[in-house]
Each structure stands twice: as structure tokens, then as C-alpha cells.
Length: 427
Ligand code: EPZ
Image (cartoon, rainbow, N blue to C red; front, side, top):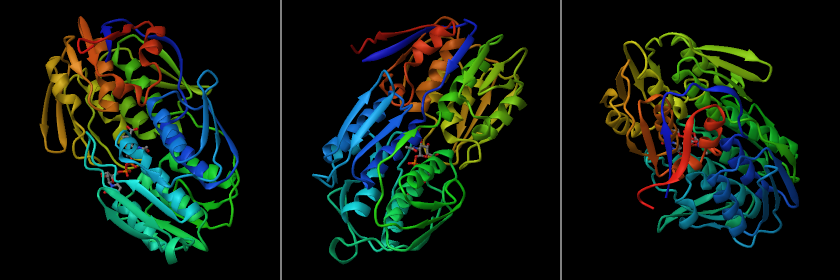
């Protein structure tokens, strides 16, 4: 397996362009199931999760091709030959559940493996299923699979009013896609407001759907009889942008221009980074990140958008190991999203976990060590720690990292970091 080896202390300088947003691309790829014919997606990030989704779409009968040089995906979603998402594929990536809504909307039936938990938590899909039932679907759970059927033995879904018990990103996306072809109006209350949900709404409307309010907490969808294929360029990845902004802030005297960082989509993070003493200046369609002098400790509580993103918690926590004082990171979205902490303490960080809160006593000079990646964002935080730790850090099992970051070691090396991808001791 691959590892990334980093020798800490190198100042980061230069320009970095973020890729297309993984968490926008995944639902949009699933949305192609709603229409016949060739769709073209541009600015698609070259990531393991994209390959996994394309493999699932091919399993369902789609023809796909991914030009990784041009970052373009073409999909011919003719008649599906299957309406089943098997455990072998879904267990690799829980976002595979995003084919459920489109399949039942388009073909009246779907059999999708329950995603199972993952490293960061149980991550149930009860809200997805309750919403589909509200639209007339019959849902059965059998042998770890969701068996869904449209009303009247595979008929067309009916528009409905549905309120989520809590904002769920993929739950909102699944039901928006299901409602797009339902008969009548669907109103979804307490929807997730992430920019990626808004982006899906834009794409569905490009396909001929009638979605109003995507990106806000109330979304109206007037079902139509048919949708068309589309040509769309994916928005930049705000979490990737935020990750590199933190990396630049973590290494003193760095000066990095993060191209594609849309400040409006990262307001909570930007506010907290500025409070910590990081300078963030808009520079065209980029953000220039500099940090001179000490970092101040800042408390963070994760929340659904527009609150502080849970996907940035691990990265900000690493930044706080450099602050002069104590800060508290509270993770409210997932029950087990501090797995980066034991690895950071092996590097000398002083962090105590109390339930959902991690208390970080900063200003530690971390020591390089061999550490283990566990989930996507935890892996990124360990790489950031390696950038400023003394000596050499080896982050192992970076396949976690490759799920959501394109060639991170090459991009950091281009900014002056001393890092490379190697085969780790596990071979
Ligand atoms: C999306 O996951 C993202 N993934 C995650 O990013 C992100 O961390 C998460 O939203 C929160 O922002 C994609 O968009 C592909 P949720 P999702 O449903 O949709 C609970 C990354 O690093 N819940 O918004 O699965 C759930 O347990 C990944 O790129 C239910 O209880 O997250 C969690 O506590 C990791 N029942 C909370 O809601 C449900 O039916 C938010 O989960 C659905 C969710």
C-alpha cells in the first residue's frame, strides 16, 4: 500500500488550483440515471470515489468513459440492465446510496445494499427511506438490502410534503432526484443547505426538472414526465480548498494562493481562521493565505451548512496544535470523527477527548512519526501535521486520502513541501 513521506518545516509558496467538488460530482453522476442519452460532466476530480461511482453505473448498464487528462466524464445511460447496487460496491462508498432515488424514480424499482457504517459513524439512511415512503414507495429491508418499489407494484412516485428530522446532505439529494420525476409537487422541509445540494438543483433544472429553493432549507420540486441529458462543469471543491488553506496557515511564513476557493461557501471556516490570526485575502477567483506570527486558540463546533463543516474539523484541529493556548473542537455531526487524535498524540500533540469534544493544548512542536490514515479527512490532517512537524512523517494507507484529494503529495511538493509517495512497510 502507498504512503506519503514528508519532511517537515518547508515554507509553502505558490499557486494551487483546486479540483471539481467530489461531493457535487457524486450526486450529479447519479442524476444521469434519470435521463436517456449522452451526458457530459466537466471539471470532474480524478478520485477513487469517482471511479467507484462509475463502476456502479456500469454495473447498472450505463456506458461510461473518464478522460482523466481532460477531467471529463461521458455517460450513456440507456435503459438500465439492472436496478441493483450490490454490497461489494456500496460498502466501498456509502454515497452509492445516491442511486436509490434516481432508480426508483426512473424505473419504479431499486435494490440497494444498506451502506453499513463506516469509520466515522453508523450513518443510517432512515431519512432517505422515510422520504421515499412519503412519496408512495414500498420499502422492505431484506438481508442487508433495501428493496424499494414504486406505488402499485412499481408505479410512478407521487409528490409529497416531507420534513427531515435532521438536515442530511445525501438524503436531501436522493429525494430531490426522486421527486424530479414524481407526479405532482414535492416539498422537502429541513433540507441540507450545502452548496453541493444547490449545485444538484442547478443540474436537475438543466435536465428539465422544476426545482426551486435547492441550497435552502425548503425545496419545492414539481415533477415532470421526462428529463434530458446534460453538459455541466462541476463547481470547485470547497473542502479541498479549505484543506489547502489550513495547510498554508499551518506552516509559518507560507504564502499560498488557492485558486477556486469560493469564500462565500466557506464563511464559517474563514471567520475561524481569521480569528486564529491567519490572513485570507480575496485575489480574483482565488484566496491568498498568509500567516505571520503566532496563532491564537479558537473554539469550533461543527454544524450543518452554513455552520462550520464537519469535513474541516480534523484539519482545523491540527492547526490548533500550533496555537498559543487551549482550544475546544466539538464534533456534533458524526459520533466517531476524532480518529486523527490518537495519531496526532503519537506525534506529541497534547489533546484530550471528552465525548464529542477534543481539548487541544497548543504550541506543541510535533515530532514526525509513522502514522495511520483512517478516514478521508483525518488522513489530510495527518499530512498537514507532517508539513510542520520536526523530522520525517510517514502517513500510511493513503488510499483513504486518494478518495477525496487528487495527487495531494504532488500539489504540496509543487508549493515547496518536501514530500513524496512511497510504498509503505505493508508493501
Ligand atoms: C455528506 O455525507 C458528505 N458526503 C460527507 O462528506 C459529509 O461529512 C456529510 O454530508 C456532512 O456534511 C457526500 O456528500 C457524498 P448526512 P452524508 O446524511 O450525506 C445523520 C467527506 O469527507 N443521518 O448529511 O452521508 C448521519 O448519521 C464525506 O467527503 C441520519 O441519522 O451525511 C449524520 O449524523 C464524509 N439518518 C448526520 O445525519 C439519515 O437518513 C449528517 O449526515 C441520514 C443521515
